[in-house]
Amino acid sequence: MDDKEIVSALRVALAGRVGQDRYELWFGETTRFDLAERTLTVGAPNEFFQRWVRMNFQEQIEQACFDVAGWYPSVVFRVVPTEAPPLKETMPPSLSNGSMKAPHNAPALRVVHGHGNAESSGTGTGNGVASQKVVQAATQGKRCRRLATFDDFVCGETNQIALRMAERVARCPGATPLFIHGPTSVGKSHLLESICAEARKNHPQLTIIYQSAEQFTSAFLESLRGSGLPSFRRKYRGVGLLILDDLHFLAGKRATRTELLHTVDTLLREGRQLVFAADEPPGQLGGLGPELVTRLQSGMVCRLDPPDHATRLGIVRQMSKRLGIEVPDDVQQYIASRVTTHAREISGALCRLQATSEALRKPVTLPMAKEALGELIRRAGPVVRLPDIERAVCEVFELDSGTLQSSGRTRNVSYPRMLAMWLARKHTRAALSEIGSYFGRRRHSTVVSAQRRIDGWMADGTPLDVSHRVWTAEEAIRQVERKLEAG
Image (cartoon, rainbow, N blue to C red; front, side, top):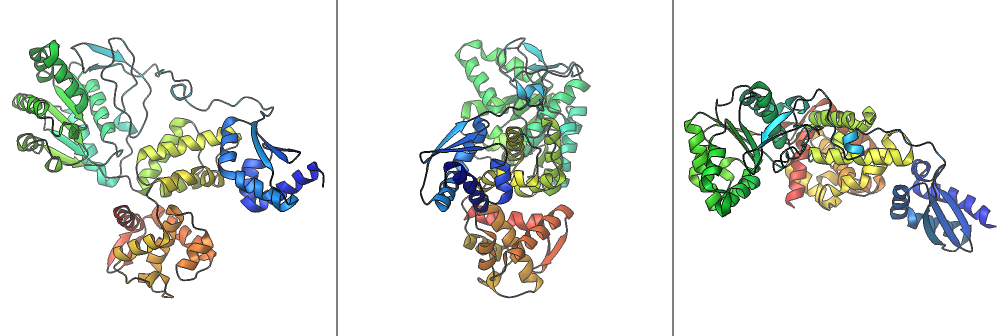
């Protein structure tokens, strides 16, 4: 065969190795192959495409050439731009060019900054769920983005109390201290920003300080070095609303903790509003001291839980709209079912989908999502093997070792086995046939069926009566994943 015939045959062999869907996605009309003197040049339309093909398919390309020609080529990857019209801009200006343009009807918010007594006005684009801290150390006149709002907050059933208390504080500051706690990226900072924005709208003359505990510490130390402790105390003890995030940062910082304690006592005596957030409830924040912990427990303590499936689905829809990308319903369900840790991972998944869609110049589809997000989903948790999943599922459902590999078909065996197969698809790279063989020598079609049933149960909230109690699929999966994380 001449070089052109080898390239044609190589394409057929490569499609057989990677699958027709993946071949069409990455090699169909966009990637060129040129062969000369046993050097195979792979021409990609852009750098993103080139990097992805090189990282994920170089071995298959080399093997496909060996299958056809009987020798391994020297593979060179290059960018060969295609003649195509420029991409239509789909991202909002704040994401596409780094500017912080705000809608002209967005209200200007005055926030007392972490250094000095000046206030500055600024507007910017909101960033939805799990937003970053407002830049408190900005200089006078420097613009900062718009604060998150309650309207942006996607709330599940378990987090209703925290949301309602935050709204109450924003309407009527001074009612009761509020302490919000929960693991990372469940929306604590989002609620704090929402309180700040809503309180400013409802009470324009109210003096508000919203900072992280680290910024409070920096301001206190700066006052000790030169700016003056009396000025610091006038600033913080004269506010109507003090909001401090990441309070766990103060653990072990005795001087700062004592200063905050006196500040809290002053504000409580005068009926001012206090709002705090941390990763743990007050009683579990080691290093804060019993006096401060007692004050923190004197008000309303609310927990924010990780989002359930319905809430994650709402977050996916909201973020997709904000990013300006069309995400089909089946892809939304896929992301909500697979990206289960926190909202920042959902944001990262959607950004990767957007980049992949633009690089390929194709709309988002389920095969594209599975291909683009596969590595991200596998990296979301620790390295997991099929025996690890079997052990964790048996522990949660109180089954004897080996039960999931038996031929049992009762509900107490078949439901946990389906959950194990679903988790194996999420947490491992095992093939369908390998998963089916491990869990009772089932066929790969059984694994596919189990995955579809679990996805349906999660979407519908179907109750499962297993092991003498009623579960939701979401709850059962969360329990097993906690076992996997604990090792």
